[in-house]
Length: 54
Image 1 (cartoon, rainbow, N blue to C red):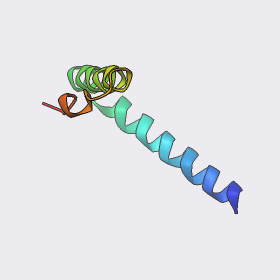
Image 2: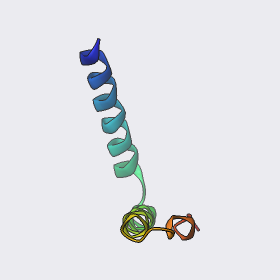
Image 3: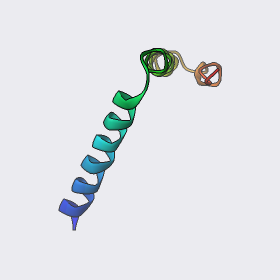
Image 4: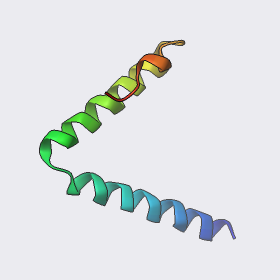
């Protein structure tokens, strides 16, 4: 049963990558900037609220 969950997670990850690659370059840049904000907010406790999408 764990194998099925792992495959499902892998399939979801591949769907996300495909969706990202289907975005136009300017939208990809927005996604990357947003993720970088989230990573930065994790490094600084209490900053997660500021990392909301524009």
